Length: 341
Image (cartoon, rainbow, N blue to C red; front, side, top):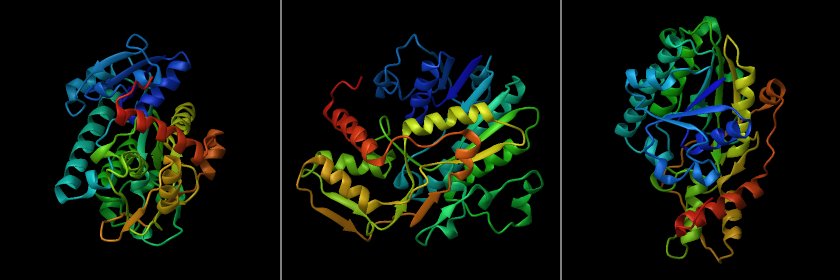
């Protein structure tokens, strides 16, 4: 059975490819391959001959069609992704995320239908959940907070009050879910992914909070250790290998109507707590500075993973402390130009 991973040289995708290879699956990576220079696959021990690489610009339908050729199951992770500044800093950034992801998703889904793919696992996001609920502390989302059942796929035209995703990126992921809900004769798993961290996460403008703070800690005191906001805002952090395992389980359980699950740790952790843990890991006498002027995004965003545990027989295995240690070591090597594998 051929398994195709779009975006398979990216952050989560590279770890998923590793898991599939370890299970002796025939793995094909469909990507523009622009990230090959980052050594994401080789740093995880994947050699060039271990998987098939198909170079494809998935925003072009004909290239997407060739990329999907022969697939039994497609894990669709390719997307325009990044941190707060990269996705939400300007209206043009919001528009770019919306347009790019709508185009990629439409092409991949259409290609899957034309090529008779049996299963799709879609990397959606917690960004689909209503933003108006995310600006108070202690917010936890269950899948029922946005349950796109078969009779609700017209919600956009009926003004359903719960539709309020996080910017262009959130809208693109919500539209991807709706597209999949209309697809018949194909089993589908939808993963609403929360805050994933770990090796191979982008650094710089496209990085998320953990990689960004570790980056600052490694460079400190050459760079200030600045935390956006007061540090009280919280996120649901899950280590990347646990995310990959959940996606594999979802691939086994995919169904029609689609099976939709949250993928996260189910625990809220404040950014301030993460900053303190990273400062301690550094072994340096770091002065943490909180900048209340900079935007922080939602104050609280945590996933209830009760359904995920029950349906997938899955639970997170890597503690935050262990995951942070592994990620810190990786970021430090990356910044120093050391060999990662």
